[in-house]
Image (cartoon, rainbow over all chains, first blue to last red; front, top):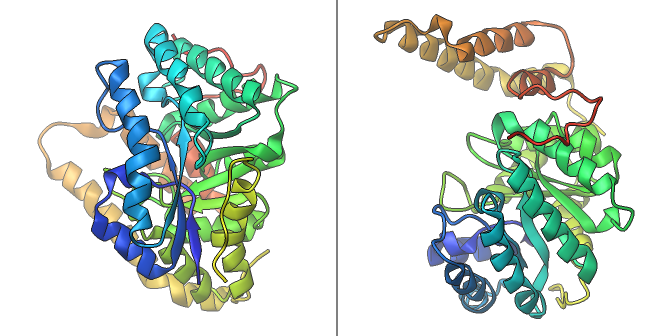
Length: 270
Length: 85
């Protein structure tokens, strides 16, 4: 079965990983801009990184038949210095105009500070002003509930937000209902220790259903598995779920969400 | 939506994994006890104890309850949109 990996940091993965994903049936990936494991010292570091996501990584995945789509944004961990963040935000329109860029992401909160929130407001403003898709990172661990609710409150206060075009990622058992009840797309992240395991992701599919649900590996430079989606597919099969439901989760749902981007141009394999 | 498995079949499938994770958790607690110093005053140990109480309860949303136990306080009213300093 083909699958789409809607959230993975290919820049952190080896070519062997890309090859393994292709062999497992991956036909397209989404790569959000994120924190690369260190704070960049100047705005040029971001410019080069955005070029990497829009020029180099698409070539690497194309070598194995995988289409690469990127998201442009400023992650919450580097959003604390608001004047610096503004310099980075000023770079984004150039890259948002590129053909395989899906929208603004991943943006969000980390420690839920005043400065993170100020930067986030500016990023949302940029996205809404350009009618872009939005991808939100919700904080880790003990900050997740608070940060998720702050993001939901921000969005609820803006009448321009079209909830069909917003993906709130890294949901877990205590936040998925909040996100789904308000009509947003919810993302589940398959991580070995933090976030959710394949088994818990399938639990949430069973409890909440497949509507507006995306499952990803978010594989990056930390403990993570670029084939985590296939592990979740195996759990679904073991529990007796139909192939049509598995296909909806791993292929049709990502395609439905991504297709809302006016630049999205992808011919699904037959 | 739910699986077509009966509870009995699900227990067959889950039992050894649950047993293993329980023993892992017990061994972690033993390891902390064997280490130098006195951990019980650490609030994280109290969180672990409360998490274990949730597991031993009858609620059908234990995973959500454990998640809430490990979350910063966040009242629903008023909104938490007041950021931390």
